[in-house]
Length: 495
Image (tube, rainbow, N blue to C red; front, side, top):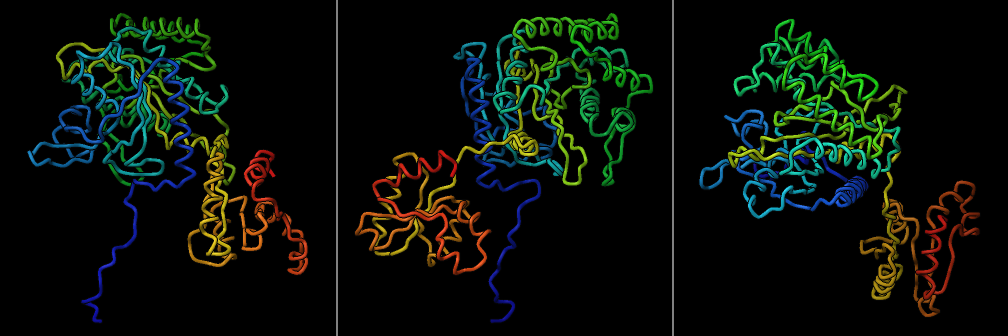
């Protein structure tokens, strides 16, 4: 066959910024989502699922560039020439749902949801273009009490994930405070200043990664990163940069002390003082509910990078002492957060609709738990029923069905290969137990159970092959009728 007639074979390759998730990661993510859902349910929230696609204009100005609907999101044109976009997060679709069903919903409408979201952005380490978010939101109730409740929910999700209180902190701030600082620096709190305010927010959001000097560059003319990419700055003057950086370091050890420092900082700004009053009410409710400053603190460096927040904002941060393979400290930082976004639903309806929410990235949270050795996988590997004699396949399937009916994971080996290959398969699956039954055992009502974990440990101490065969390590022949109880007891005892 000539080269020109060779069949085309595409190269097996994964798109940048997208990841394959194997079984152990999927199970861990499912367990984390289930734990979070349990918290949301306990606070009286209800589940909701919205579609992956939304009309681009429904996501609107909160996209990175509203005039180019395929920038920042993955978009396509429908047959009616309307732009459809894969959802950027779960919050904007919620706003559309509430606006569309407003009159029939009990308010506040309290919902939770988990789902994949998509961002057409430059991928990098820990930065993916598709990932799972898990959210809880309350729409239709104003006041700091709703924000305080959402902050409590964030703290409870940390506990539900298996973290100890000293391993995390929830840090709270208020966008109104920064708005007051920016107003005094010449950035109007109007649509005219919206883009400049967003640039300031995104600059501050990088404080833990870039440090004060890097953020100062982004607040000013701009900054070039290590790859050579240039990011335009917010164009603040020297006094404005100084005021914003001073704001990010205004927090104190206690919540009450932080509020006092902020009141002095915002001066006569009405918006800034309103932010202080909201923090004071949040502190009152947190204290009454038993959430001390060791779990929830006020931190002025927290701003959240998205433009739709309008009041209190917060982040959940992991505090564990983690080191990489070379012994260097690893900072995990924020794994979730949220805040108030009162303008998101109102853009559909032309009336004020208050809302607040909490969201975390599931993959990022699971990765953090792995690094902290705090990840527990509930699923046990399956029991492998070996196909010792192909004429007995019906019996093997019956054994597997009996084990599954008793609550155990079990599978019959249905591939090609002798017993040696089947044992290798069981080893690759991480199985602890393999069940064998030949015609003689079938006639006698017996099966042989091999404990592969124990066998591997015992084999390390046996030097000769003859000795191994004589010892027949970790192998026992039992009555077939006793197989389920035998395995259940062995798994329970950890042998």
